[in-house]
Amino acid sequence: MATSIKFGTDGWRAIIADEYTVENVMRVAEATALFMKKHKMKKAVIGYDCRFGGLLFTETTARVLGAYGIKCHVGVGFVSTPMVSLGVVKLKADLGIVITASHNPPTYNGFKLKAAYGGPMIPAEIAEVENLIPDACSIQSLPSVYDLVQRKLIVDADLEKMYLQHAKKHFDFKLIKGAGIKLAYDAMYGAGQRAVKALLPRSVFMHCDWNPGMHGQAPEPIHRNLLELSNLIKKNPKISAGLANDGDADRIGMYDEDGNFVDSHHLLLILLLYLHKYKNMSGKVVFTFSVTDKMKKMAEKFGLPYEITKVGFKYIAEIMTKEDVLVGGEESGGLAVKGHIPERDGVWMGLLVLEFMAATGKTVKGLVREVYDEVGAFAFDRDDLHITEAQKQAVINACKSGSYKSFGSYAVQGMEDVDGWKFLLGGDNWVMIRASGTEPVLRVYAQADTLEETRKILDATKATIL
Figure (cartoon, rainbow, N blue to C red):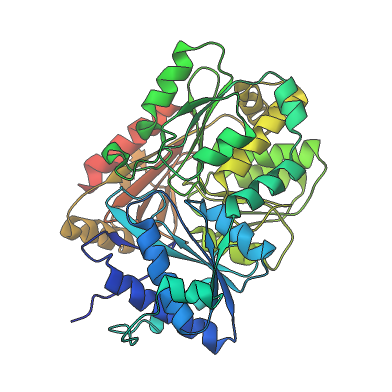
């Protein structure tokens, strides 16, 4: 019986050599080709990140698409997801494919689909592709890469060069260099490493070599995975800020000059502050359900419209293609801004923060203080609970039935269920429970005035639900 293949919040992901096999990649590639032919699409851009088998799975995909007469611009060497998305726009392609499992552990690989506008394909189209996945690829003998190159159905594309040229046109690198900002950059063995070395060569670099095993560390730019970067900053007073990206460099993590983690909630607020207050830009503010409600508060203060979506950047991207969006983002480090493609881009967002620092002479801590002056101080944290499927379903059912009236001493005063369950605990305090769409994990998020209080809420919640 064929393996059931489902796309999660951001593509299909599976463990290499288990469900992520050449045969299954062929099935997904054929569904993509069928979708393209149905919609009279003729050209695709394909790239892979630093994970094991990237070139093999990329060539497999290109060979399937080539069998259907679809021209494939294939990235030269490993590239980031934003490079593929930008390449789709620059090359006027119909669709983009990224062979990546993003922030998942190194045992995984995956398959992301990008639309002609340079961002995630909308959910309805993803579902259409998913429904076209055959039980087995119908092509008996795939054409060779050599044959497709000769027929010009596979051509090389220097996606990284395109991206670097695009970035150099959009940022004031003289200003950033002149400000004397010393950056520490952790690529997490991911695909952003060469780009940041090229754009910010005076930085201190960590984990910027090709290592598909990633020493077993999931390349997700959250604090517990970045302690080495944090400690480096703490020991080196000359370092002004820390930047980290995930495996395909579409997510961001940052540190202030003291080695304290600056999460996506704070970064979204910093970006909104910079673009609206300092650069006089306007537009809609769009963020997912798990993001701090301080975004709503700042948008209202600035007189900007806002919208809250389900978890998953694809929902933000869909709005960005139809409306004038200034800032969009999600809790997990995927942020996007006006003036760039409707795509998460961890390198681009880091450059914006550095430019903000250079333009104002403020440190990262200074930028955070200005955010607090606007909307008040807050702290956020998240726990990922690796529990059994039975335990997970029991918690989900309890959330659905409204069984949770309190978490320890924290009484539930209200509940929202846009995507998952957010329990309002009074003031600006809340806790949210949601099952991951890409991993066998139950996520628990919390916000309070201080990190200590946030941890108390998380601990009380875990004690209640497990």
